[in-house]
Length: 444
Image 1 (cartoon, rainbow, N blue to C red):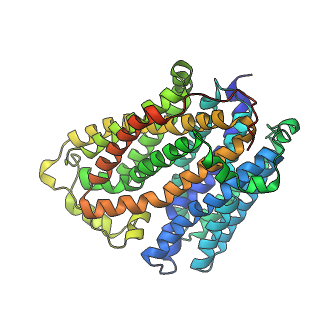
Image 2 (cartoon, rainbow, N blue to C red; image 1 turned 120 degrees about the horizontal axis):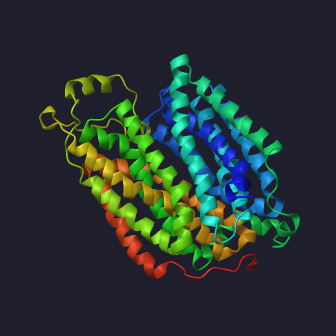
């Protein structure tokens, strides 16, 4: 049986889980605006989930090492479903924030699914397996926002997308109950013999480990830089290329397609040939180079751009989550005189190394971390890794948005690209080379 066939139940439930999340994610600022939320309060709504995950995901990941993947997946999925129901029924801003905190504390779906993948793989196939779950995540990000937009076309009520998200979350519960078979055998669960106190402090134990802490810093840094790019993508292509609405959506689909290609087709081949460490280094450099190229995108709107029409369309739109966090944000628009294809073509080409690098980094770094701690603690380390990603996701839009507003559209990407290239150079020396043998149990 091929790796894809063995991993198919995990891939399927990951995809369905992500669909629920991405249906409500683009609308969170609108839920808050229903209750006349201030920019700071909207920022709190956006940050509540990733901040709660800083606590919840490492603990849930460590518990999955002790009690198995399936029970922890079910707990995560049930609480995620309940959080969407809370959102659908929310009658106040406080209830919206509470629903996101509740999901963040117990919703370790992706980290637990990744841990299940590591149970089904060895060192030679682990990065490819993690890439498959990343691809499922990417597919969800392509389809989920389209579902939320379609729901709002059917009904103006924001409760409808939340109910649809809850329905998809319920489907993931059924998939786990009836299609997912436990991947962590009882003897492996008992092998580490860790008490509940050690489980609860899994995050600190992992951070203190030499080699692991370097990889966690790299994980945080690359996610911070790439999520800053994602959060500003719509504003950047508006200010440089005059792209709005459907054209902007096509760019997001293009980025998603490249991510999926890298995680499905490339990562397995590259890690087999070059090893995870070298792939991670190449990916860091590719993201840095891509961001610098993006920053240098010519200030040339597309051939059909009309500045007056864009201004009219902008007046009818609700603000994005990044804009809402920062309050009233002025975006300089290009002039009609310099229209052409050059800017769009440059930007599309710049996205290739940037997006491919981003698609290769996380599976490679996660696989290297598992190699450092041993397979018995894969759930714990993936939980800690996910919490570092959540912290980066909470901070990146705010920092990047301020840089965009104060210093101009190119500065966040120039700084991010330069930082990633420096990071790739430092990582050549700092990134650990060796891994623990498969099945090794580490002692603290």
